[in-house]
Figure 1 (spheres, rainbow, N blue to C red):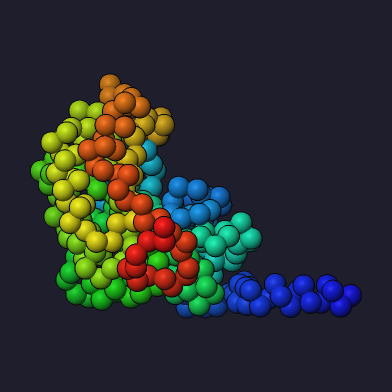
Figure 2: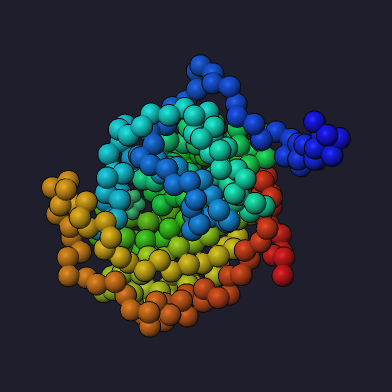
Length: 289
Ligand code: SF4
């Protein structure tokens, strides 16, 4: 091996000293994985390895992944198995990317998430939690477990399905008070967050509700990005396959004009805090301009 090659290897190792697969160990928490996306570009900053976990309590009428609803099914994987698979793609993550846990609802497998993200942080990998927030409670012992997870989470992606609790219940089967409380809590502790609003014609595409959502999000101090997710019908065929009635038949995706109007009403352009994430960088700072 030439001296030049040795020097290059030494430099590479110095930049990324601990990014190596972990050995398999007994006694790990297993998670139920629905599917994996190796080059996720929309589930958090940069390019990310995304594990979609199985199980969700909500039954959102617009859900395009009803096959994630059922609990305790899917591929059982240990945190090391997920991590080792993810590490094969680390060269594509750059400075911003990393690992995202999504769902289904990841907070239903909170111990698995905590174990995996703890290992990620030891390796210097950026961690992102994509949640609908429904399991959130300040009751113990759940709240302490959640705070342990937050300690090793760099950014949270939170969906607000509907700002009005009664409408939220109609849309998802659950009220939203605890979900808005989660948003407030994350704001209070300065945990960086992206907020997403699904835009559904006749349901959330409503100036009154969008204005109320905007007013709520403005009270938060940790929102780095605020996105509109236009409703789509790409998952409708899954309902037929599962023998489940699709309840939004006849609703078409919103037009570009309606998406633009919603972005204006929500003042999405005001949330420009997207910045270069460093693993473990969870403090609220002024965005880099
Ligand atoms: S929270 Fe997500 S996974 Fe669960 S039903 Fe709603 S859209 Fe589907």
